Image (cartoon, rainbow, N blue to C red; front, side, top):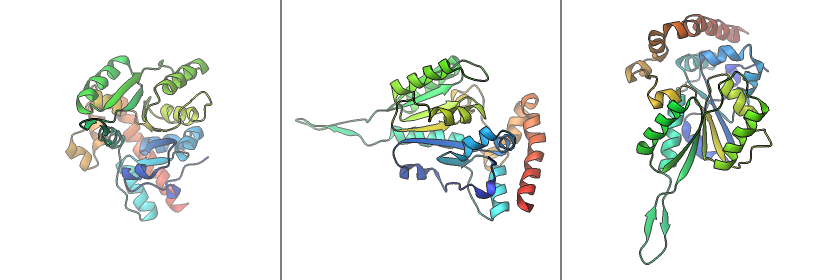
Length: 257
C-alpha cells in the first residue's frame, strides 16, 4: 500500500473531532520524516492511511500539499492535538447534583499515557494534575523493545480495557507507535467502546520538560526542524539533512508522476 499526499484528505482543524461518531477514533500525524519512512515501510503506510484523522504535522507537508494540489492547509502538530484533547476533557460540562441546593461538580474524564519511561510519565502526571485538574491521568510504561510480544500486547490491552480512558496518548516514536495503535484497535482482547487514540511521540518529552520544544518564533517560521537539529545534531542530522532532500525528491516524483 503506497502513501501519496495527493490523495490524502487533511482536516481544516481539530474541531472536526467533535463531529466524529462514537467509537475508537485513530488519530495520527504525518511529517516529512514519517512520509519518507512510509515510502519503504508499507505496514506503516497502511497504518497511516487507515487513520480516522491524519494531521499535517510539519511545514514540509503543508508546502507539499500546496504544491501538489494547490490547496492551502494549516499545520497541526502533535502538541496541538495533545493540548486540544486535554482542554476538551478538562472543560466538559459540569454535572449538577440535585438536592436542597444545586451544586455543580466537574465531569471527570480520564486519559492514559502509554509509552516512555516511568521518570517521564511521573513528570507528566505532576504537571497535568495542576494544569488539567478535571482530567484523571493514568500512565503505563511498556517494555523497551523493537517489537512487543503477544504477552506484552495482552497486558497493554488489559490496562486500556480496565481504565477505559476517553483519550489514549501513545508515545513510542514513529513508526512503531502508529503500527502498534493500528493493530491494537483490531485486537479482540481490547474491550473499550469509545476512545480517541492519539499517537503523539515526542510530545511526552516536551510536556514532561525532558526535551525542550522550539520557541514560538521558530515554530511560526517553519524552523522547528532546524532548532531540533541544532540541539541534537548527532541524532537528527540524517533525519533532516538527508531526509529533507529525500522528501523533496519524492514529492517532485509525485508531482510529475
